[in-house]
Length: 435
Image (cartoon, rainbow, N blue to C red; front, top):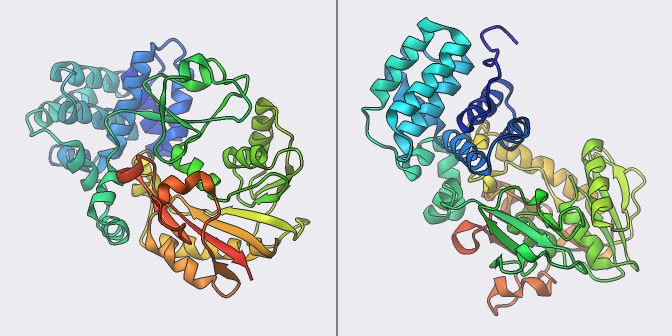
């Protein structure tokens, strides 16, 4: 890190300061937004819950509007904004000026100028002051327009072509209320604070919490009464249709939110294996099992593009929640849009195909495999289904808990779920039988 890249010296925590520091991590280190914000909120221990919510809004609002904000700043910074600290300060201030009404313009400008002065001195602070005062005179930015301007043309076109204009817009712009999805754990008492919470539209196990702060600090979390899991991700896990006594393989288990549901479903008579290419994720998975007091699964670190390790070939059902562009999560992870290139959907689809073909060898004949991605792009969804039809036969989903999604129609062989109809992130899933 150079002196120019160094963040400002730590001072008393503020909502704006948290947002700026998290944004610096994203701009400088290519950090994932959620992880960067989590680190900064953890550091700001004394920050009130209201200010933590404001920090979250400032950070994600700025990320989601980044390209539009840069376009507004550019005419007044003809040499560009190469200093990431100054850039972060100006972007957050521009978001406050152009997208929020409740923060007075003078307060937004003064806070940014003070931050730049502390980090880079009086001369640069004067530059920041001049730029922001000019920006403040411009027209307001709507959330819809700002988010749309921040999606590169090729990606916006691919989204619209894959899911239509309405769904594409819903994937880009988040709802006005920040909703956290929780999954109730079978056999555990529902905490009092969750008993009157909203039930999800797609998963009856889901509880939707608005503006309650971090649920992991609430009653019932330590006791394993619920799992923090977005409702759409719950739907994908349920789509496997695991039954008591079955043998289940979660081939791309990650930190195990879906895996724990499989263990609940198969019970003590069944068996669950969880694999992932990253051992650290499996360590987190094991910790989650301890919290939930579930029987630990068999864990293996496996790169399915290379081989199958010692994973047996007798599973009743296999879940492949494959690596993808993540375009279904853009409303929560807007930084994704700035990192994708046109070649990524095809590249990641080829990677996913290799994983599916390898994992399919672990399914018993007549057993089932569900392929899923948190992407909505056709290149990663329907296109892959066609390519693997030589080893896997499309078959209707076998999961009674999701019958409400089909709306009394026969269960499909593939489905999409997303924000327009269900208020979830965007997902695609396809069901197969081993030939």
